[in-house]
Length: 107
Ligand SMILES: [Zn+2]
Ligand SMILES: [Zn+2]
Image (cartoon, rainbow, N blue to C red; front, side, top):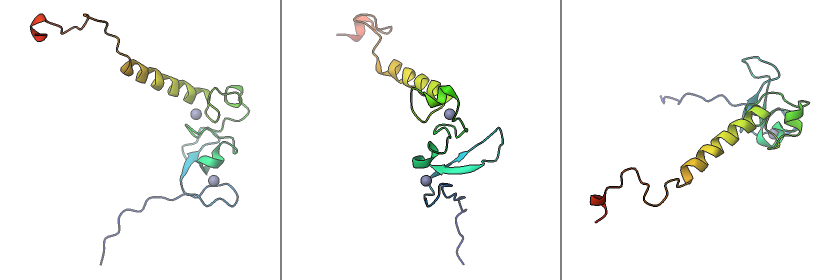
């Protein structure tokens, strides 16, 4: 006998005639259990945020989001992440300002 690996729950996209199982949970309210599952292609059309899965259509900040398909909270989150990446990319130290710069190190 073979030991089957633990089965991952598979959820098919709730969109009519879509068979994608590459879905994410979607929530109509504050429930812990998802109301629907949608794939990336259909989640926006169904009115759910692509980032957190919350039903967001009709909310101005979502309908006119800076990043279409994402609610204000997720946009904030994405911007924060980008800002952090920028910080890491930037070389903020100017010439001769390295905190560890000791003349001995630069022979
Ligand atoms: Zn779909
Ligand atoms: Zn969101």
